[in-house]
Image 1 (cartoon, one colour):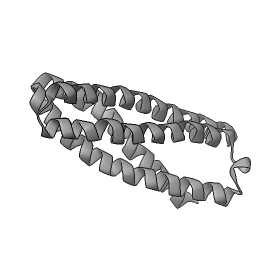
Image 2 (tube, one colour):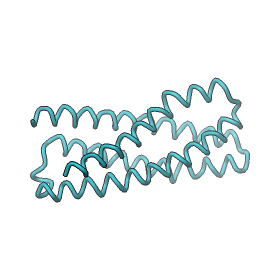
Image 3 (cartoon, one colour):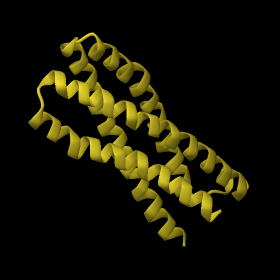
Image 4 (cartoon, helix red, strand yellow):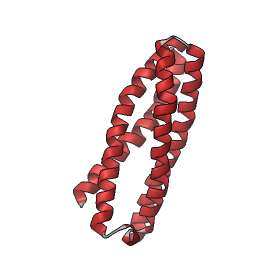
Length: 152
């Protein structure tokens, strides 16, 4: 069980930590240092690499999480904080899917065709949805930490 919790935690750290870095560190630096075409080109490459890791993290989260639910005897036997984690984690995954398929894929196409205005609009959508997912991810971490402390 400990191994599954550790793997689950690492997947969360990669995903939420990556969003934190992108939103809080990389975004302001790119705005400060790069013109629109270079900035959109950078984000296109950064997001492609990051999103590859997020797909892996999602697979790990779903596999390890569902297996731990199974080991505990089902969702009805899970502590309340796990229900919070699920009720916020599933919308995070849906938001991520939307970002990838309906924002990032068009962003890549706009960058390839040097349509900077349209690319900038897609990047703005991505930014706002990543902010939402970052908030939800941090909320989950807090709920789990507090919930696990209360349950102990």
